[in-house]
Image (cartoon, rainbow, N blue to C red):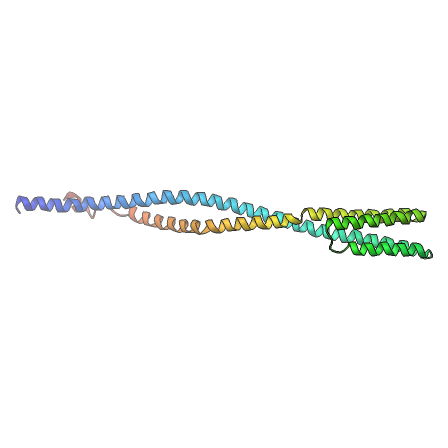
Length: 225
């Protein structure tokens, strides 16, 4: 082998050895760099998704509380009006011999039946005022009815109070639904990217493990060369 051939051989062998080492180190570096970037974004999105999920869970609980409260108030309103009707029934029976009084009591019962329907708050307030005036008129004509009529007025006022409170939370359920829809939309925009990052991280971790397990040179003989 002449000198030129020896030099050429050396030049051919050395780059192969160092080229492999540099290749592996470069690939390892690339995977580590991407893992750092992906893990950082993955963590940020994970935190954001947790915040969104916590907000969604809280909104759902609040919405359930609102729905339960609405149901209770609706039942209370109907119950108080029913109790008012029952008291008037008892009063009507008590004064059945007084035809004029019975007729006026019957008219009040008709008004209560009407107010039990689906009315706005303002409409119900007006109806209740009318009922209270009619009850006051009855009380002024028959002293024996005062305590009974006061009990009727109390029930009617309680029913109206339930209606007013109910109306104050009517929009809350809609607000919670809108909030949930907005949170769900935001979650839907983030989730695909979060899942993609999860898959990419796993892929790069597998690749990094593989390349870090590779020898930097083919064998000991090659190093000596």
